[in-house]
Length: 366
Ligand code: NAD
Ligand code: IPM
Ligand code: MN
Image: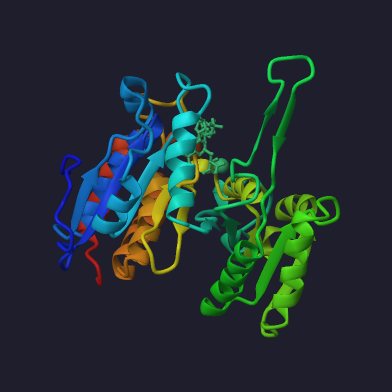
């Protein structure tokens, strides 16, 4: 990988240029393996540039997301591969918010796509469920809601302190993610879209979600559209996940629903995500965080990051290479070539090596 160096604009060529931001903790370890597998899938066709944004850098010189970073990424790269951020030495989470939430907001990555696919029946904690029962996607609004950072403290640190965090919902923001969900379903010939909110309690912000969804569903008569309150959705996802194909919800609920959903399919170690603005520079990462208690132990499962890389290849238009990655992940799970979190006894690096070899032995199109 090249060190972080400004590359001449317009030098994109036939290959693809990927900014790699490993971040903190296991983010660094899983990204290293994903890069290995990516290079095996598209030998010589990916130009990877690594950036050291994360806790170490923040503690060293106070940098979170450097000035001009967003413009540089938009100018010089085709995609971003992200690890995870979060470090116990930065209890405020300041760098994580600036880097990850900053990139989501400033790149206007309004779709957080979190597919949930049970790759082997043995991986689900649910009884008597097969892969066809757990196969849906959570589409999480990714730029507003309670993540806007609007709010403040009053009389902080006193017995009278007040903390306010505003839930910001704009018509444009709500419309575009709900429309994306309907269009996603149509494109993939899926028939069911479920929108989840708490409009019964959040009678302003989520009433807007309910109203926009009620208006828009009329434009998609071919799709069985359904509304659930978020608490009911959580229950239904566990009781009968097979009823869902596309779930769309707000930023915070999508965060929670996607961890729950990930566990239905074997856990956070396997779950990928794409932070997407259709047609623009987008960012791909595992759903999990930096898991400080696993960091440095060669225990983290790299599959979430490898599957996020497959989503990235799809976004770049390299669907055959993306499918090769997914094929090899399925083969690894079938063969028990996995880390401990999913019942295997291999390390992070060994799983990465196995996947890279399998991808090499299974060239695209074969
Ligand atoms: P986490 O996702 O890091 O870990 C939760 C649990 O899942 C842990 O028990 C961990 O052992 C397990 N786990 C996660 N990824 C795994 C993997 N690849 N292989 C095996 N097991 C795995 O969540 P947390 O512990 O709540 O948060 C730790 C830090 O990560 C916090 O600072 C948090 O803010 C941050 N975080 C960052 C992101 C991100 O960068 N996108 C996402 C979630 C959490
Ligand atoms: C995620 C994470 C982030 C979020 C944190 C680290 C701010 O949990 O990507 O799911 O809440 O979006
Ligand atoms: Mn999360």
